[in-house]
Amino acid sequence: MFMLHFFSFVTGGSSGIGKCIAIECYKQGAFITLVARNEDKLLQAKKEIEKHSINDKQVVLCISVDVSQDYNQVENVIKQAQEKLGPVDMLVNCAGTSMSGKFEELEVSSFEKLMSINYLGSVYPSRAVITTMKERRVGRIVFVSSQAGQLGLFGFTAYSSSKFAIRGLAEALQMEVKPYNVYVTVAYPPDTDTPGLAEENKTKPLETRLISETTAICKPEQVAKQIVKDAIQGNFNSSIGSDGYMLSSLTCGMAPVTSITEGLQQVVTMGLFRTIALFYLGSFDNIVRRCMVQKAKPEVVDKTA
Ligand SMILES: NC(=O)C1=CN([C@@H]2O[C@H](COP(=O)(O)OP(=O)(O)OC[C@H]3O[C@@H](n4cnc5c(N)ncnc54)[C@H](OP(=O)(O)O)[C@@H]3O)[C@@H](O)[C@H]2O)C=CC1
Ligand SMILES: CCCCCCCCCCCCCCCC(=O)[C@@H](N)CO
Image (cartoon, rainbow, N blue to C red):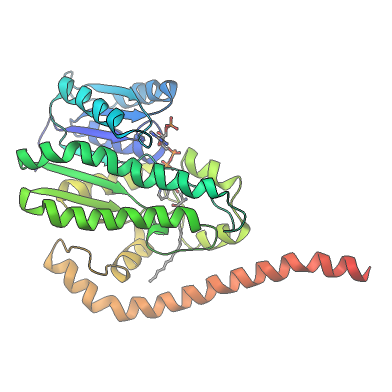
């Protein structure tokens, strides 16, 4: 559907997966707008992206905004970008963050913060572009959820719920906009080597780390490539690797189906993948139990010493 000169608007485009998505689009001739809060990081990312230009007309515009605070502010930023570069063809909602910890140890404010950034921070930009996309009968909206948006796991009570919310939004929105030729993609990346993951790892509970190690750490370039490919093709689901494929197939629920092949694969593999999942769940429960026993041990030793 997209030729040269499409316009991609990427939130969280100054770092990690978002930056790699911007580079991937730029390599295909896109005009880019990056938004994030920190201006220095935005300018640095702009320089890096511009190295990949394929023609001298391409532009990278940077605008500093917090996507999670005020809808009017976000709408203004999108208006500003559209005045300079024309209507948005592809919106990528990649701004997001994570906080992990046991339910009772996470600050209550963390639940609010993650819901604001990960969920509302995806609602606002999408709400601001949707009318024009529907009118033009052209558009792609990408949401970046997570494998932790397909299953809930230890330490992610706040994070997983904010990523599950994105899926509900995406499914409902896709049903509304499909007749207008606007397609929604939800990406479910595994752990990916980014500044965001490094930050998260500083405080991640041991249980969460051990369970996450089930899937290998991906490179952000690889994740970005897959997401852009799926978005351009109009695939609702975007996942990486064999675990990603199994998880998406297993948790397809009532998600829209993009092709007959995809639907048939889901039907045929469902029972097998559920069986495999039961073994994974067993091993996750074991990890949690072993960690609990391990933590209890020093106390016992202390008392008898
Ligand atoms: N890395 C991973 O392992 C995985 C990541 N994901 C998801 O992918 C997305 C990107 O993750 P990753 O690349 O690791 O993250 P990074 O922390 O590396 O980058 C996050 C980006 O979002 C921006 N951002 C954060 N908060 C806001 C805000 N309130 N308003 C505007 N911009 C904001 C940051 O810039 P600034 O701080 O300057 O605003 C930065 O550009 C997230 O949604 C994350 O949940 C999903 C699965 C795995
Ligand atoms: C048939 C069933 C197959 C089952 C495979 C199960 C694999 C579960 C691993 C879950 C890993 C969660 C990664 C979250 C990454 C993330 O979002 C944070 N790093 C964000 O910073």
